[in-house]
Every structure is written in C-alpha cells, then in structure tokens.
Length: 428
Image (cartoon, rainbow, N blue to C red):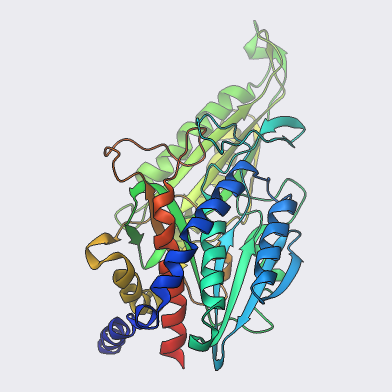
C-alpha cells in the first residue's frame, strides 16, 4: 500500500508535465477541429464491421500527422503508431468507432439521416452511444501528441476499434478480434487506456472505479420442446409457453434468493419470448432469449450452472424438455488497481480533484475488457451532459434522443494526452 501511495504522490507532481511543456496551447488549438470531426462522424454513422468511410477519414488524418498507419485490422479497424523521440514503454489508447441501428429524433444541424440494412431490415443509423465523440477525441489526442514527439518517452499506439456494439450474426469483430489479430503486439503494448462519454455525467466531470468497473455480458437462449395441441384441449399436449413462463419466474429467484448481492450486482433479463403462430394452437416449441450481467466470475459460474439446472428441471416437472445455451460473451471490464491508482492524479490534474468521482460498478458491458484480459488497462467515464441541464434532463444511451454536449470534448483530449504522457514518464 505504501508503494502505491508513494507512486500516486509521485504521479501528482508529474501530472503538471503536459501543461509545463506547452500542451495546453496545442489542446486549445485543436478543440474546434475535434468538434467538427465529431459532428461529421455523427452525421455519417456506420454500423459494426461496416465502418468503411469512418476508417478512411481516421487513417487519412493519422497519415497527415506522420503517424505510421495500419488499416483493415479486424475488418475495418485502424491502428496508428507514434514513436517518441526518447526510448520507453508502449502505451495504447483506444476509441470505438461503430454506430447503432437507431433512428435519430434529435433536431440537430448535424442529425443523422443515414439508412442502412440490419438483420435484413432497413433501419436508421445513429451514434446513439457517443462513439463519434470517442473518435474525435482520439483524433485530437493524436494531433497534439504528434506535435510533441520530443516529449514522448516511448511509443503511443492509437487503436480505433470497430464493432464494439457487437459484430453482425455469423461474423467476428470488435476488441476480441483485434486482440486475436495481434493489435497488442508489434510492438508489445504495456498498458491501455480508454474512455466512454456519459450522457448522465455533467461536462467537466470524470468518473472511475478500480477493479470490476463494468459487467460481463452473456447472451443466453433457452429452447423448450413441448407437444402441440388444440388450444381448447391443453390436456392433449404439453404447453411450452406455460413452461417458459415458469422458467422466467424461476430465473429471477436465482438473483433474489441465491446470489450474495452485497458482494456484487447481477442481472438476468429475458428480452425475447417466442412461440406459437395463432391464438387457438398450443405450439410444439418456445424460445427465450436474454442477457446475463455479472461482476464476479464465481458468481457468473453459479448463475450459468443454476440457469441450466433450473430450466431443465422445471421443464421436466411439466413433462417438457429444455436446453440452455450460454455464450462466452464479453468479460468483466476490470480496471487494474495499481494502474488506476497511479493514473488518477493525471485525471485530477486536468479536471480538478473535486470533479473526479469514484463510482459503483455499472451493469452495462464493454468489450474493452478483452484488452484488459491480456494487459493492465484503465477505462473511465467522461462527462457529456449539458452543464446547464437539470439532474434528470438527460437521455439514456442507445435511444433516439441520446445527446452529448460538445463542450466536454476538450477535457477528453486533455485527459487522454495527460494520461498517456504521464504513464510513459513514470515508466522511463
């Protein structure tokens, strides 16, 4: 503990490094560009694994800065390598670049009017989770650091990652595929940082949590086999819809009666129930599809085992059959405690200590966790809510009304620039 505290105090003194070497001027100069890039990306969003134009714009910008660029990583990903004038370690900064199949309702001059195809249907496309801001912040950070290579003790790897929201069915993608294709190698990355804009957190504020910060997410499918019958004669069949309802009810008892929720939160949500074709036919089969969110791997195993056991036995009790498929999914977003502690002074320096908040874990998921399975990583939340808005005046992520205030982007550039330089300074 003494070592961590001493290192944190050392970092506090180092965190003036960016300001002392004139980076504030460069960061201020790039703000208008960052806002312009963000609005352009917002107006021209692209779905997961289809971020072709987005990738072209990113690559062109990085090349214009003299940064070594690799394209086509994990389909549409872009990786930039900036070598400083001094030897040292390698730090990676990550931004996700994909949008969502959501039709925007905001009345903005840069509102998305894009239409595309998703799962065979025409859909609106929108940056409804703020990835447009992540792209712009990273492009701005790259420009500032490229102008200050003489201050970099080591190498900065910029990872612009596609498909954070999930690759289309039948395709690989996202952070998992980037890792598989070697994004953390050549040169080997020592630590990685990422941020996520928050529509609920006011501009000027930053939130973080060491350890398990965001949940693991798993998709599950329960298939129930019954026996078809006329709706007027249920005794002549085995009703899979009735069995499905019992399984849904049973699953909630796992959360409320079996898990030690004072340890960590957990969620089982059934998001889709399907079965049957008309009102007077008891169908032969039914299906449940949903998500599991856990923040502890022992609890995750407990949930997975009990879901299978419960579904199979409930079905058996009613003379039906049930099979449960649970995908590996996205791991827990785990912020390395030492990296978090030593990086915290950098965030406090740029935002003010009073504006950097320790928060509880979030049951949302992030595939940034695939990087953290391999190297130390730190993922934090950047405020994007209009500072003049009321406490309840924000729109959730993944909704048509999602909105971010551009005034928060400059702090994102400051934070990413500072956190990268300070990490490399500590490591030299």
